[in-house]
Image 1 (cartoon, rainbow, N blue to C red):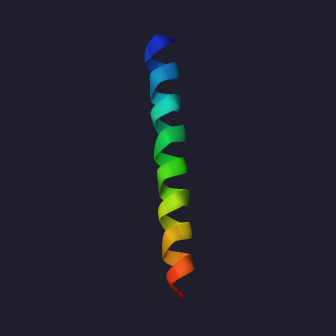
Image 2: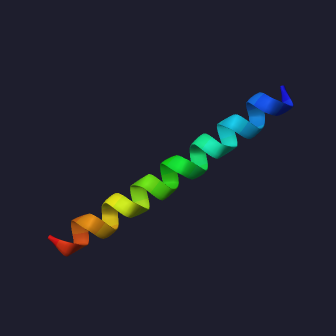
Length: 29
């Protein structure tokens, strides 16, 4: 369960980073 929890956490972090990156790109246009 620990591995799954860490994987889910990493997925959330990656998702948040991706969203912030998309927002930065959107601000340019």
